[in-house]
Length: 369
Image (cartoon, rainbow, N blue to C red; front, side):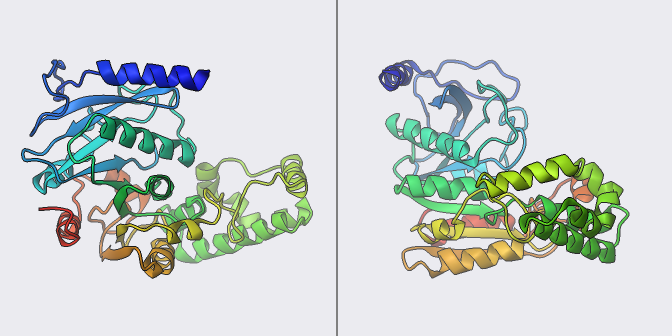
């Protein structure tokens, strides 16, 4: 009954939805066409129990494709921040329409923002956006691809496997199966009043503490293995409190009962997608992967190897990898790639070749004019 009611409401929404022109700090006005050529318009669609709101850019000429932007970690404000304002016109010039929308509870989207939202829920939003844009006959919706940064490295593959009509994926600073927090923290330590030697010591203690936990060693062994790590002020401020004995033993008990969170064997990072390598191997699409060689947020070399071993060995897929020297996680020109520099850097300038690599790849694949 609920599904029937939801579909009925959704149908009404499609019939009566009004798209409005989106300009910074302007009042939206009614348009005679949902997606007029050469215009940026507002659009809304249902996803789960929320109405998500975003912007749709149509190229001046008939579109030969549509690129959906998938956000990375954190909040969004697609209008206020003019998100992807550097890429959208470049893709439009190639004949691609583009679409981007705010996360639940952000911008003009309804719902409650959850910074730790499930990547599977985020993928459902991508599928819902595709369905809406296809049903409304949006320009380029017969040839849709995804563009995603960081956290989108989990979201895009889920969506790609659920919709076999998606044709390509541009992955910027992608992901392995597990969370990147420990790597990020320890890689940035030398730029936070630490040293490379201390970072190596803390990594070794982190690994030893993970092993103690996973092999059911007592709390005392965990304490001995992680004494310097737990006393380090930077890691404490970044991570928060380390587990006390009651928490440690409770978590171990949950693991014995088969309720242990999925964590990797190295640093006990949470695994977002089990059998992620299998999932990537099944992607029969064209993929362009971009990495910054000074990226300290992710282990980009590990991601590169993962993509090569999976997508790169799929005869039904193509994989192009481009690495940029002197580039950070966001592919901005960087001296260190550290979080401190990324936060304080003004202005933020994309590394040379960042735009050309993407537009040339789209042309080479026959996807752009």
